Structure formats: structure tokens, C-alpha cells
Length: 261
Image 1 (cartoon, rainbow, N blue to C red):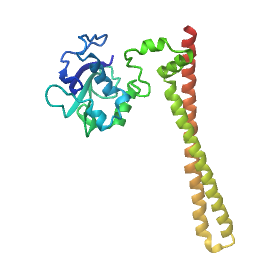
Image 2: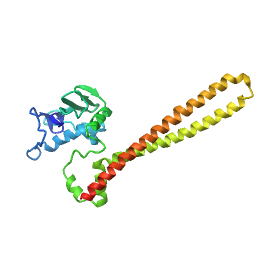
Image 3: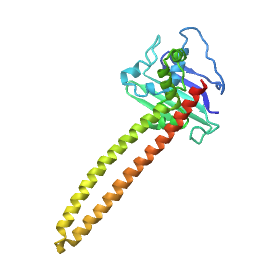
Image 4: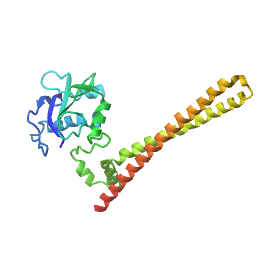
């Protein structure tokens, strides 16, 4: 299946220049070394590309990530992950997919197979492969397992929701409710406008000379009703129905997991 095949690091934290020319295993890889040899920074580099915790780093925060050894401090840094994509999990027509993030005090950019892409495109690409930035539990950092074991029941339930993706859907459902609220407001505005149009139509009924104007207003009324009301409300209803279905499936999965435990 899809896995990280190669890692290239330059100018990042304790790494002035480092790469792994041999392919990493698609099963288990063990990184060993003495204290201070850079093991934590190696995993930090991977999270730097994949994880949402570092996606909005400001200029001064990025500078802190640059390598500073015995010589001059690096002016820029990059971390590049090469994925084995034989199974096509990433929606890219390539057996290998290279994702690189380059930073300096003034820039923070991503490239996909050597082509510039936006942060939003990176997020969408990772989401499509199961690396949800809103649910970053595909990386288990040191101490997280012990912390989970010490959690209260309600905290553990929240953790299960996060791991299962329920919190993501909660957020999406809230966003959909905002869409419905906005649609209702627009509907009220449209109804008010339609009322004004109808009032003006009645005023024009006695004036045969305004027949063309009356037809224009009637057309505007129909266009407003169909283009705004139907489109906004249908889209909002469909989105909420979809979210509710997904929430029900996740809740059932969580209950089943809790019952097994």
C-alpha cells in the first residue's frame, strides 16, 4: 500500500543536509540513535509536511526551524517526502509522488512533483488519502498513548470521536447549519423584495402604459424565487441530510467499539 518511500531534509532544525537513498519499508521502520542525534527532529520533519500544527507558522516561527550549526545559519530549509503510490491512493497519475515544503523567513511554499501548489490543494490531496488535518491521529507522538490511558471516560469518548472523525463531521454540520441560517435570511430578504414587487405590480395594474414594465417585474419575481430560494434551500437541506447520515454511522461505530471494550 501507499507509504513514505524516501525522505529528503535540508537546512531543517538539526539537519544541515540529510537523505535516505534506500527505500523505506512499507511495513515497520525503526529509527535508532544516541540522544541528540536527531531522531525526534526526523519525525518533526515528517509532521512538518503532513500535519496541520505547522501549516500556519509565521515568519519568526519559521526562522526557528532553520538549521543553525557551527557555521552560518541556513537561510532556507525544505523537507521532501516521496510516497509509493502503486495503489493509487493519492489521486495522482504517478507511481511515486513527491511532496516538498520549503520555508525561509519570507516564504512558505509547497511543490507536488516539482510543481507549485497551494496549502489548500495540499490539504485536499492529503484528505483524499486519509490524512485529515482535522484528525491528525495518523501520527502518534511520544506520550500520547500514556495520556490516553489516564483519561477520564468522557475524555476518552472525545478522543474516540476525534479518531473516528466525528468531530470533523460536527464541524461540518455546524457549518451546514450556518448555511441554512444564511439561506433563511436570504429567503426573508427575497420574500420582502417579492412583496415590494407585488405591491408595485398592483400599482401598475391601472396603468396600461406600463405593461412592459409589469412583465419585467414578473420575470424578476420568478427568477428571484427559483434561482435563490430553491437553489439555496435545496443545497442546504441536502448537505444537512448527508452530514446527519454520516454522524449516525460514526455514532453507531463508536457505540459498537465501546460495547466491545
